[in-house]
Length: 309
View (cartoon, rainbow, N blue to C red):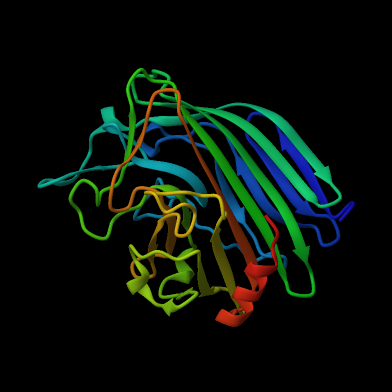
């Protein structure tokens, strides 16, 4: 929609995307480097519904490195590009700062508002704590399908990660290293504290038992503090995503939690490591629908089916 969005670049810090008609800031894409212990990397926070309700958490006291919506790598060839303590089998989570790396902003190739929405194209580099170049990433974040009658809008996150080492990059998770039901890595959403005990919905199942399971989409619905009402976030795999030979049918396993805190990640290394050879590129694309209200399964499925890739 022409003129529906405005973007302001606060150079060296963040991009702010606002719905022009209402003045609601839908998202803030922050790319400044932060605390080295928290594995500095760009992230989206706050993320808001069309009515202005915040649906992300930032630096919660249980995990200071949880920041809104971000690309992560919890176990990467011995490095931790997730942040905080590192999981070591038989010893639990340990403070190992020499393992904690970073994803560094290099530059924006595009920041454009167009008739259908907005697109941000960014270049990043991935590093262990020693600073070596391990990977280069081409990332895009798009805002589109703003639908005021339904109170929803969509965000598409695309990442193409190229191995620049002379050796394979091994993407893993605490589960691949021995901890059950902790397969978090890849794109990761941390919900606000109020969303604890929220509702988890997938196409053919519901509830926290979806942890480690496969589905083409997964939704999380929570109730706000301070203001009345709910919000629903729907996380969707792109049809071309391929994982463990699935040929796009079920491209990942879901990490999802609603006890202790609200979190969702379409993990690309939940049960097994993903090995990326030198020079090869790992490409993933995901969609997040941000909606006001507590949506039911039929409504979620209809919206997912109606969004063109």
